[in-house]
Length: 426
Image (cartoon, rainbow, N blue to C red; front, side, top):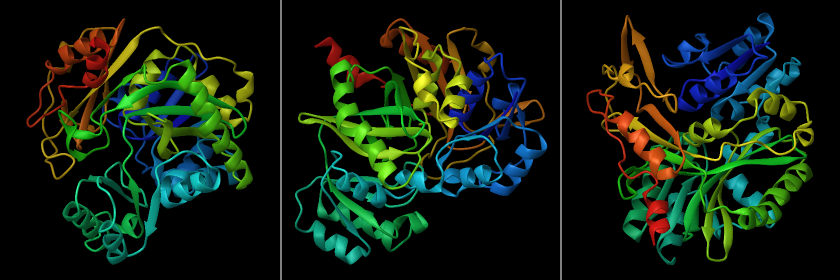
């Protein structure tokens, strides 16, 4: 069986790595991939948004399953094109992907189907939004409607900061069309947690929970990024909490999608805030999280291919319970100086050969080869992931490897998992 994975980041490296363990797969392709992925798959020079080119490739090469990593091709209708050509593909179609591609759609969907979330208002002009902010109780959260690679959310403490964020989004167009509309919503208090679920549009199977670290710097300071690290599982979602999430969020979401005429097949990622009054939805994503995937997949015992095929075939109910390693996984992201703002690429990476540990995995997020030299090729460069008996041990293991890797301007957060470890010690 031949499989095609679409994307070029750490999430896609983790997907390729996990799929490569399936005895049913003969060959894996990745479009476009990166230097790390190239060690496991044949990388092809096609952009994730080249819908027709990718569909042509899948037909020519008799690809049995295509797995879509990033959100852009899903929002752009890649799945629709593949389905039109009767190609098997994992991910929601364009209608389903709106749950991430438009935060306005997602919030209005939640309001319609009584899914718990923060109170909100939608605005189409900066003047209206700023006027509204003059009467709100701070802090509030300002969100760009469209896709923004994790950088379209601003938590602001006062009117001056709100005005600055709104002007950047709606007047300066810092995120382009993503800022055509904005949401201003109340700021929920609690701990944030990620829950990725597999669904074939009828059955929902939650994966292990995880916690992402969005801010660039220690202590949850600095601008939002695509994610600076994660760990899994988190004690924030126990059996009782998962039942609440299932009853009040997962089930109503799937039923709501059905009522909207959407057969949603793929990953339904739910960003949750665990508040004093229960779990509330911060956001939906239509694909595997990044870097959450990098900590969840190393703990999964099942053959990932079987699960993805069950989703695409509408037979997820036949899978039963998933099998997990009874351990913890931790991920530390090594990024380029300046990220998530401007940064320089092309820096030589060394030290990877010094890591000799079967329970440590380095998933490449943005790397390239120039001759025999491994170079940085983006903002988030490497995901260093370790598995161990406890979270503290997994983190210690990951950081030992991080300190062996070097590239000019490398930075990383030194407090991944600190919030939960501090709580556990009380």
